[in-house]
Length: 468
Image (cartoon, rainbow, N blue to C red; front, side, top):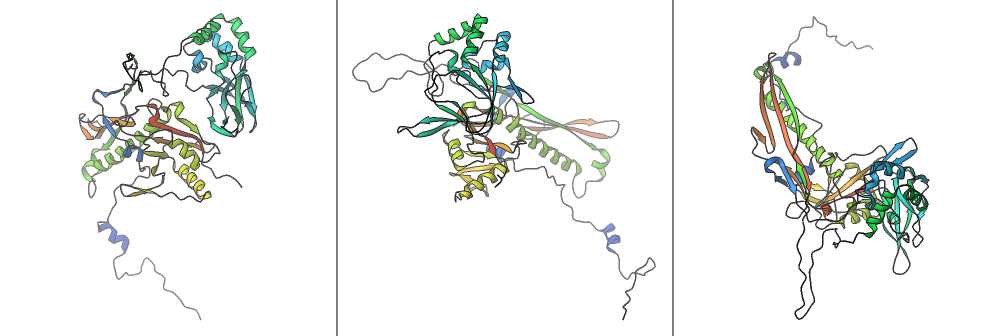
């Protein structure tokens, strides 16, 4: 038995209005324009914003005597690495020695070594017979405990150096054992090569002799000029006078900016404003894009970005690859009153996996009605602006915030002409001959780390799942 279904043709007579025709007269409900690029922007929400009059913020600090604590940079050509000659000035003994010809000759004397994991490159108590420059990889610094047990003192990574005391002390010994934990590339300068170069370049020998003879300046554990204080005395001893010395060349932060020119045709602005004002929506999305760029710069900008302005003494390395609770504890212990962690979402997921392996389930904290993951009660905020490298490694930041606590602060200036939102203004540029309306949208901002220990970074954090 066959059932024939009626076929609708163009000649079919409808008994009711089609939905296609009805849509021509209907006032459909429309959403505002949506934007996938909008993120939570927790960093800009959690940093306290400081008013900067005049566009420049100066960070006055006590005078510090620490030198040569920078990062050494290299030129890598295929599998071969060379230290940049002027980067040798990052070693304390060569700070300020700017004879590029001599530094170039000294740089040529460094020899490259590619090492497997577990290789001992320096052993405690042995004569210090070479300088180490770490090009790539991670090395563990191992010391001896009170009862002879081995203890991990810290880690070395790319850009670090070790053994520089050999440059000025002929009797120096290794203060600890250094062993590679990953495949590592280092450059080494032997004592014999140093002597040969000093014989060829008397100016180098004079520099090292002058450094060795320079008196040690009194300083505290943070490298600041010491303040003489007497305590525990009795009677009427003569008290030493003192003063607090300041850094004569303090760091100054000039407000940066992000700008865009918004263009809208007058026909669009005049005729297509129901139910949403076209100019307002265009402006809203442009401002969102500027705020995304602002947070990106607060993290990555070469001048003031947090990743580039963390003191190298406040950088540590993950020991096993993924971020473990031990790594987070080490990062947390480096400063007082840590207010927040900042990590890429993949790093947060990797940390969660490490906690799961250990049967740990940290309680989240409530921040403005949001349940945020935390460690030791310190919230871990996601930030997609923190880069993840091609090798699936990233960084986790920990910071103390606020000007009162000598922490990390964001900078802006309010009350600027044609201000639309704090630190952001919109200026009408006019209408051109093609009936295009133009608006200049500008956002001014920066960030400052008031003291070095306000910001710390856990580097070389592996976020990829490890193969079984």
